[in-house]
Length: 147
Image (cartoon, rainbow, N blue to C red; front, side, top):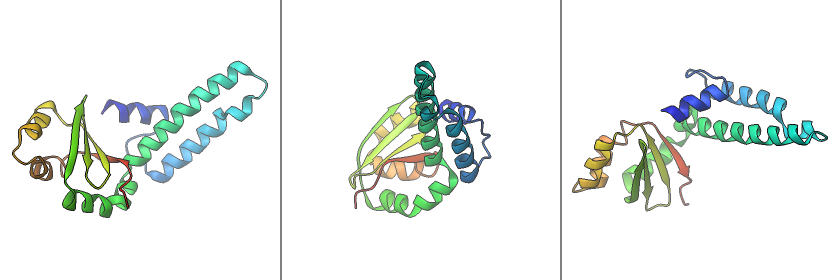
């Protein structure tokens, strides 16, 4: 997905980078572009704020899809996809967003349009998703599960 590649490029990381490498690189970049370094330089401050916002967004996104994060959240995810029904779903630009009745919300990446159309037309979207979406596509949790 382009977003993932762009964020990795922004943080100068390859696809093999693990969570510790991601954290280390993020901290290093934030030390260089932290807005507090540009107290008397208005233009530098604006640029630093812009860059730091981009870095924070990229970091949080990459952390959310990192294998270590997904492994830690797998029990919650499994519980959601097995026990909670789908409340709503939406597809935009190869990203399928599914909201569940337990309050959680997940994004699935690189879902083709024809797969989304099959989901929409399925007699049971939940069953279709269990067979064709959940095991096949990279996902991330965008809303925490209600407790």
